Length: 319
Image 1: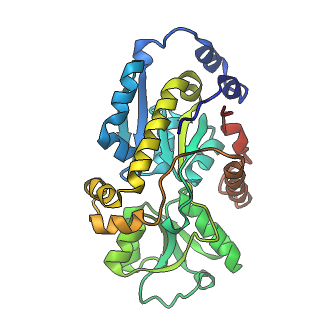
Image 2: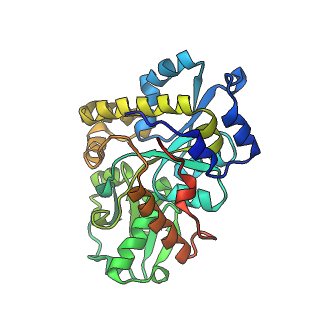
Image 3: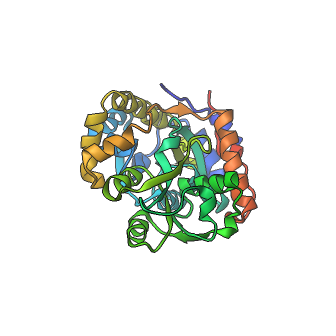
């Protein structure tokens, strides 16, 4: 699948004068600017793409090279995008909302299919907690601004528990895992593959996953300047992701083997996580924009982001 980005649509989305000048340039981009800088995490399609080396070969005829920068999680990756350290990357649903609210010049480019089983609220196997309603007054660990933040919001809403009636402990996955195992928190909201690893190692019990609550999309995002000025290169990046996705859907064991070393999780555990998701890059649709807007509105209502935002303003027109 090839997504072709309309410069006219991108420009009308509010680029500044510098972006306009870049997008209007008819000649080749200067050599020193022709590097696609991609942010990656330890898990997901982009680290697989890096390992294959196919993107470098596909971009070479256009005069582009590729650089890769690893980030510990989506919020940090988008901070890198915000400060201009990278051009493109992938995160879950919540990080781009927090980033857009903070003024990051980002565009949603594409997304992977929903994976609602790929995130969950976990409790220890012998915990007396049996339902989300039992979380009232309890300590819940999660990574602030990550995709699981919205899962917690929706799960509490469904159980008629006020967000303020739980005690959130904002911890990155490694610290949250330690707190969970030590009993310092009562529950942990986490995503795969850390979810699968905790289940395997500790017997952690799933209180609720995203089914019927959240979509749990993974989004591909780029800076506005990159999307507007390098549309041809972006088409190649998305096309190569599409090829990688097609391979990954039929080769779960091979994907698990490739990711195991980078994530530090045994391949059989990763296979459990991979079986809870589907690969297949897709263009941004009105339905997905509406779903993201619901998340943004919920975060604003809870005071988690400082202002209301419009997701549509961060989506270029696609032809």
